[in-house]
Figure (spheres, rainbow over the protein chains, first blue to last red):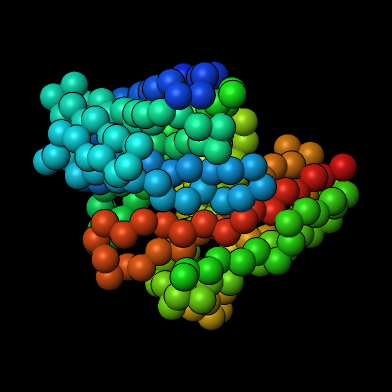
Length: 114
Length: 114
């Protein structure tokens, strides 16, 4: 019930195209949904995040769409660029015993080809 | 800027050796975490610490221990390294005081156990 299922495992997109990564969860106690971006040789870094009372959040070319009833959320990268090539992790957080706990998806390796 | 540093980027150890991985953060964060990252498995939590001298088991603690004697430093210990502990190890920290604050990751240590 603590899992977050992420798909696809890998994705190849042409430059200028739209990259879409999907995540699904079961635990209704999750209260925050961040996405992390990880470049080779680096640790993950927060890219964008959404609260469950919001259906969409946009920051530049990156958009999170959130469907609370379906327990699904997705990351859309518009006008994908070669510099977006990285591994993307969705995550979901909840609070237990006064502390935040985080569950990560398994990651999607995105390659944007020129 | 939050900075999380890890003592080594690459380590090669032999089976049975005791291995220490060090992590230091400079933002006075209460919470610190150790993850391992493996292809197709995403980020899996090994141990975490909510404050100095506190530690809690994560999802895969077997074969590992941790130490947090100072707020800024969180050490991961492999008591007797085995080949199945070959992996990328990521340290992270976050502020306890902000409910939806993100985790800040170090660059990772790639450990190879021969």
